[in-house]
Image (cartoon, rainbow, N blue to C red; front, side, top):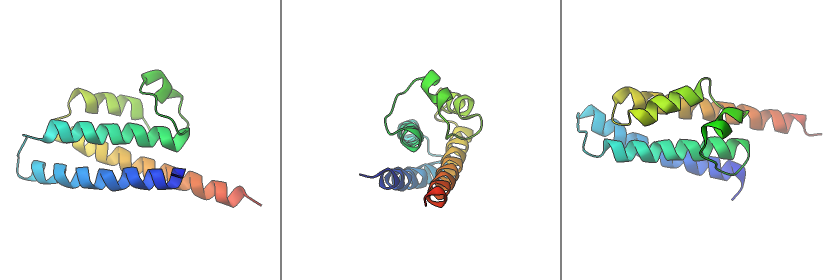
Length: 116
């Protein structure tokens, strides 16, 4: 699977998880929220590493070294993982996905523009 296809897969999977989470938070149902958030967090980690180098390494040091990442990604992920049931964690995770998608798209456009 090519890099772009892999990123599209992660975004599609995130949309499914996000819809489930939105429904749970809208109805104030917390029963499946921690598991859904963990799935979303895992998808974000996979996506951020695939955007950068294609292999996933779940260490803070590796994450800090990545070129393509949202601003304050490490700190924001720390907040999210420490409070996965919190609505604000869901909002932050959603924003991280949006920002990373934009960063990746911009990088792909720049690569295509620099090719002769």
